[in-house]
Image (cartoon, rainbow over all chains, first blue to last red; front, side):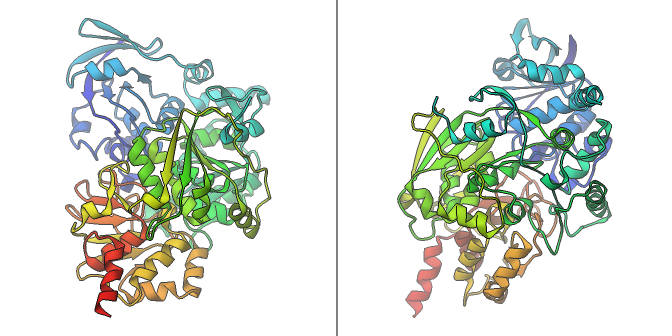
Length: 163
Length: 427
């Protein structure tokens, strides 16, 4: 279980507002972190603390496939993103780079900006204001990538066994 | 069991025997494409994975398009990383200014998209390939690093939404209007994780360029991929661009769909998407009188020769309104040259437009036409999110090339028929 403060956002938070296109010349995670969510809330990077949670509505991470967006969220210290639903490419990117993501519409609806919650990443169990929520489980094929710590170590293991 | 077009393409590329919607399978793509943003971001994980060689250099395509020609030292460095990776790996399909253009248009032009193909791209608009009866799927950089290393990736077989097109186009109706109307109906996550499958007699009324515009924006409805039925136009396009004849797929009667939509082309009015969502489509007449500062005709959905012809037909003998900037971006070098030979660039330029080198440019807020605070643009691009083309308080209205060119001439959003009718009235 880790605890953190909730930063609440609405539906359809797209990757252009998470990491505006003009910063796509950057590749260093700490450089990208400085502009995280700048398109929607320029004060976010000043407010967020390591381990905090981003909680949002439907279709989080929609639009561009830019992996710079989840990298910026991870580098700025976001401990977990909980959303009612995720856009497909963002979801894969987050899993691949080891940024925890949990799909849980009920918590996404109830969570209040600035409040605290406790989340167990492995089980997807969320404790919030006396209530317990359960995030959707992952298929075993995807669980294996998460358990390996992301797609890079996962492929590393595969390539080393092939060699 | 009856199958959708997407299930058939996945089955033809999967290691598993059973390939049905909802199942997780491992598929081997026919081609993998990366650009000057997603490529440099993929090569470090590729090496960290322990990979040294790409799975097949002939199946990898690298396109410098987003910041090309380089706008500054950082983007020049990114393009150099892309080019060096290509040289190191023996990848001959490297494209840049002068021989390339915007990746999705380039990929089709060089014959890497054909019926039955499975296309992976580190860019969300890889779904554009669906116009040619292929399945194009967008990914991030680490996924494609794995695809470069292994020649395969896991995917959940998407369920499908069937879209039947009927009727023939009214004047000034294009593929753009079809897809903006569809996304207006289903919303920007209406096709989340699904495949959009297009067919029906109305599909044949759209030429291949217009079909690219439709397929390109499938992802704006949340779709994983998109595919259209093959016909003679598709086979002719593939043959003309040196593509293999491929293995065209058709949906079986009785295939299962998550949902169905019907769009009657003859009943549409040009659709304009109001910021900040491509799903905010309204008939153009509802926005009449909206003043514009800039008009942008280009991008991977609507920078085709067909779009340039439509724009030129409005601009011929007319002038861009005072105070309005018109930027026209042919999607590829080949389209640029074809438009030059047809005299379209002369017509467009004479009207007061600036014609850009082929690049993703300002569409994603990169360069070559960024918007200032409070400015309003009409663009034939595919996204009008907050801050997409520049300042967060700039507005972008998405529309077809007829509507965009008409807005440039009128200085405000207007039905293109009103602009052409004025001429007749004067005469």
